[in-house]
Image 1: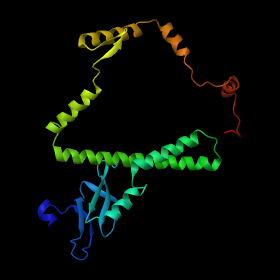
Image 2: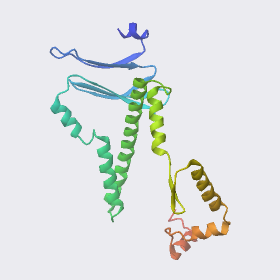
Image 3: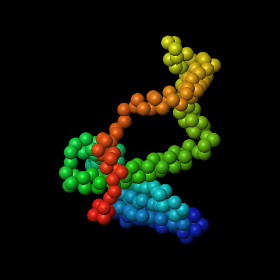
Length: 225
């Protein structure tokens, strides 16, 4: 069937056998373009992670579900390991609590491990967003379609600065906005360098103590190396 449909034998698949009157499940992909990294399956679903041969960082997930039962869906959705956004928020809050407290060496080790987990979660979320973007592109067409034109215009309208508070008044005229921005930046960048340096020196930033600063200049010994 695949050979006749795709006119090629370059394909791989994962399958679940039929049970009762169910026809089973089959997920297939072009092996010349994608490679399977891992997969998990049960009697009701198949989940595969595929990577692009040309770019190993470009990955997406193939999910095939047959007759899902409500209780199983609820159980799966409540699992924190499957809810990426919830897990990311939990890990970020945990890291923030540790960063704002005095921790032991054991907790420092745990902090390193959980930071690696957070990076994996970020990668997982990026992969999900890429897959959603692909689906949207396939459904709504190319970048010249009506859907993307509407999306771009909506984003532009949200980001548009249509009025500002300038010299005690709200201004919205395009010519006034242009004049206000031009005057602000020309005044700022036209000031003398000494004035800019003075303002930078007034910033409150963390600094080393004098004793710590002198320690940076001292010679090191073999034991320290």
